[in-house]
Amino acid sequence: MELKKKKKEVILIVVIIIISCILLLVNHFLFSKPARQVTISVDGEIIETKNLDQDADFVVKGYNNGTNRIIIKNGTVHVSEASCPDKICVHQGTINHTGESIVCLPNRLIATITGD
Image (cartoon, rainbow, N blue to C red; front, side):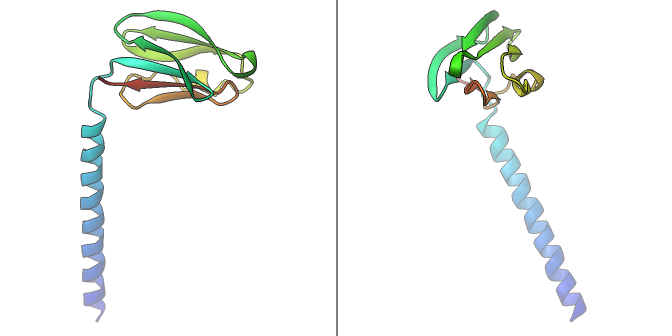
């Protein structure tokens, strides 16, 4: 009886590992498109789309006149300065892969990297 129970547990673990590997591969193929641009939205409205092939340094006005300084350099994006109190968006660092985002909740800003 005990051996039968252990066999079922091993089979369950193997099935979970296989499903996890499949999901990991699907995720990799979905987001493996080369990053081409960053889309900036404030309060759910797209205000700007920039090409990642061109370096840029600009300030985005967010909710309640909050500001975020966004820098695009060598195909990466990061927020270098923000008027929000917690500065989580600044501490998030750089992003450069399709699907990655930088979010500033107080200023209601989202910067998302997209592919073709």
